[in-house]
Length: 133
Image: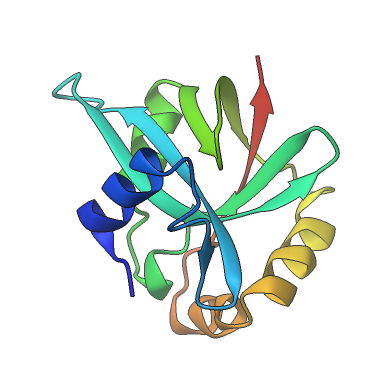
């Protein structure tokens, strides 16, 4: 089972042949720029396609604080994305209140634990839309 830095390295080295399929779902690699450090950080995240865009969830397992990558993309929404061998620049945005219910349902269908994560926290867990630039 791949996790963290090993997951990122194997995914990058194999264009997702290792790491794209993960625990019964699929992952992409999201690279954000640190809002304080300016360094690039790459995180494997569960995703689903939505038209020409991709959806991800800033769940952090239901923690009361959002994941660092989400805070980073709020500060600088230009991100890098890798889906299998496809690497591209994207603009990240939080789904609107109108979009979120359908997007949440789609993401919870691929990873049912998202519903449990939302029950664990008072924080509204955002769905993020990654739109190719």
